[in-house]
Length: 156
Image (cartoon, rainbow, N blue to C red):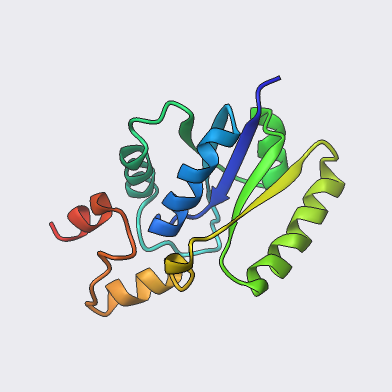
């Protein structure tokens, strides 16, 4: 049985913290699906197409990584793509408490599903997509927080 992991999120935009977690997870799984959740009640700064293209560009040389989008419950999408693992990055103890609760509920809904946590590299601990958006919105330099493909696209 293939070890398939789902790395869900909005990736609005993808950060270097996301990239770090994904790169370190590649040896652990046969396939990692970066799953961009579509949440109609949440206003995104960057289009779904932009976010998808950025992730595909960053991981173009990695056949283990693919990008998909989904609506609804993450556990339902896991079942659909036969993922038995959810991959999550942890920056802080607060992240752990939040993700632990979600992971436990996900396991209640789908008993064959496990959540795998990877710690964020210390240099990326303060970086989140919402902070990147705020810095960008206010004209700040985000080049140390996002992949070069994002910097290039936003400076055009």
